[in-house]
Image (cartoon, rainbow, N blue to C red; front, top):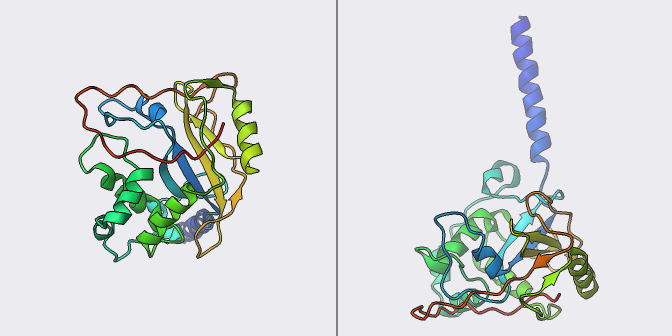
Length: 251
């Protein structure tokens, strides 16, 4: 009898824990912009980048985030109702105007089979299906390009220079009125700038907000010297790809 009571109590406790863990819907979106040269010189072994590395910020993704800055993804689908839509993603990505727009701002930096389309599929299946636009892939991708083309974003200057973290933060705060997240690679090069947008349930994100702080150990930025590296010159025999993008930040 005692054993049965212990089992019942344990089951109830697990149920309570599960409820607590699942009661964490996402509260904001992160529009993640990446600096391609920093991405490409810090890849794990076995991965390589395309020949012509853009020297402009490009999109990494639009990610639903919890208040502690942890991402919501497909593995959380029981808690966050992530689901696959019946809409055929491949069909949408084959539309010429749609494809060209995404290719311009959201290129796949990795030299891999599937090219740009594989990146977009990964981002949709990992993040888009957990967003408020989960029933409409076209709306999700359009939202990303609209945010990325926001006129309040200016040009990036002084490529190849070194900055202090405080200088970057102050200039971004002064330009946009909010505090984005700054992420660096293991070489303390500027890797990503993440702009946070308020979540309005059932709608696309529009309004910027301050971001929570990122982990200093996972995204280590040197307080006194953050490099913004140049892209290496492409090999003479390389085949150009249309991977140019509008620049969306100002330091």
